[in-house]
Length: 406
Ligand code: CTP
Image (cartoon, rainbow, N blue to C red; front, side, top):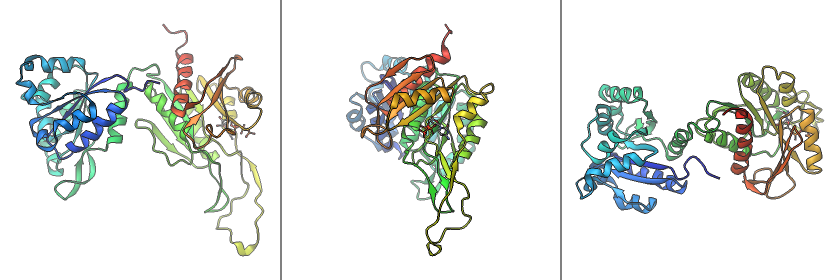
């Protein structure tokens, strides 16, 4: 499986900010994600971090101004700039932002930035007062207008000891934003995909609920896979503690009814709906307004059916997505049950998984699934990570949505 980072050339510029030490973590994560990372330190950055740090985590030479003035200096920047799929400057100091905005080229990083034709992402980091200064704001405005992606800064503790806006965003957010930029133009570019994930929770009283063991892992992986192929993604999440992938629009819902309303509101205009959520099939008919007290004896809880979301989408399909994919979590007669759900819910495809196996289904990171299609085709996949399963599903989505196009 190749994520958007795979074998991409990322040029990471590090400037003179105390956040420079965090750039080592970013370089390490990028290298672990299989990107080729070339790092350039400005003279001020070298005061904060050593080239050896970056060399050690990327396994590649770390460039400084010594390279600019060295024997190959006159061509160095052109070569680095030409190879890059993306230029990331993190942290970007107020000084470097000013240089970039005005086209100054007085160190290896700014010379390279001027020569580069790839996209540029900057993650500003500086003191709150410097960030708020009209000069910095003006420079950021110029860069944004030029199409530069500006990520952050975040609010929080600053090196000055004060609290304010000026911190570099964390590595996870930067990785997500870089991933989004690298995914642009993928096979689902321009497509709108709605994914549901996690279990729903149906109230018994204000503190208790009927729910299930779904973790949301497979659904969140589907959202990530769709983003990795360039789609615009809405993630309708039931109960899940997972962070949404960067770039997905997340809508949190609790009950099946709320999920139904969120799905119906979002599917018109969407290209595909992938229902990975474990929607509760039953809910208490009359949830108690106040906490049920044990002094009153053992309660009897009457249940009723929740709305079937996929059946409602099928009924309103004229406005709905071109492609509808369901999941079937089964503990027996996997393929027979999945095929009958595919037909009953009028799906284009169903992903069947046997939840009785220890290495598949709820909460674990792996899954073993079989795809069943409306035209009778069946594809049985081996044990995979949930992200690999998600890529396989989104490959099918891309194939169907782009079928017939050159
Ligand atoms: N689903 C739905 N609305 C519900 C219940 C399920 O849209 N009220 C969707 C799920 O998101 C999944 C598919 O239907 O994509 C199949 O879910 P599953 O619970 O396996 O099937 P059910 O139809 O609920 O049948 P059963 O629980 O009896 O196996």
